[in-house]
Length: 141
Length: 141
DNA sequence: TCATTTTCGGATGCGCTTATCTTATTCAAA
DNA sequence: TTTGAATAAGATAAGCGCATCCGAAAATGA
Image 1: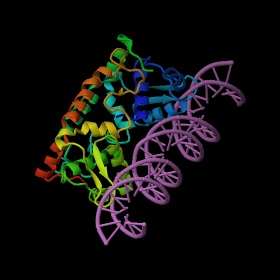
Image 2: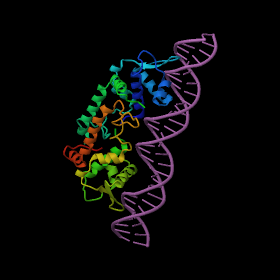
Image 3: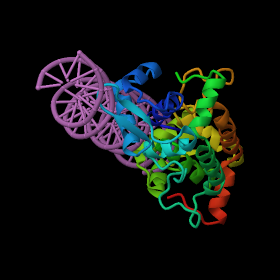
Image 4: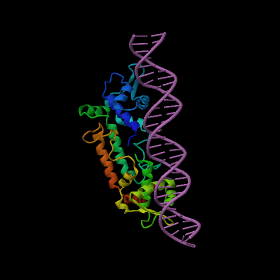
């Protein structure tokens, strides 16, 4: 459903939402805590930085932090940036040119589900997830 | 969402559901009509044969045919066989051991969607899709 | 029996995502 | 100003799904 890259990115973002918003969080520390390869995590967070979801800072005491309040970041934004395929729009049968006017046989069955998934992703904020993590003791690793 | 392999398999099965049930359909003919590489389609249909969804016959006039009536084959069965990842059960964050008792932060949000997708796939038969193809002039290529 | 057709099944090569490595750049603190 | 810590960015390797190829086996018809 979601690529590894996206999953790692989501976990890291949830972790950041659950950390002190006023200071930069070291990527290497994060990679240890989340058990994600440091180099790979770096690449992923670079992409999120380039897309303005994170602010990075180099040098000692450097790291990354969220560019907005956790309440204002939806997991939809993260998925759109990290997922290479347009999962919220593509035809489930992969037929080129499939659209409402010229639908594939599964088109009508798939559309409502696709829209509902998108709605759910748009409506779920990092703050919401971080809160759950905090209150109910849920884990990221 | 679905792998290429699964998509090809689904298209081929819909094509078969829309063909004469009493005779074997040549894979090479099918591959031409569906514009799918013959060798690759062969591999995919072999898997479906091994899993009793198709019955194959070698030699001249050979080919494959559905092992059950199109009404009795759900696209769920096909996806389960061809998809390598357990898409109807796996955690959306890919966290090992994620389950109802020890959920990841997205667990509760994802579960109803996942179940609804599964329900839709279980409830959609090849006959239903073939009918649509026939009546509304929808296409597979 | 022999040639032809067709699926079966193993082996191989390709390409993209995933993952790693290396060098450059930036910043803080001594 | 120098040193060390940390991200940035490009190059490179590994793994897996995708795709192809080829010989073997089975069935048909002559």
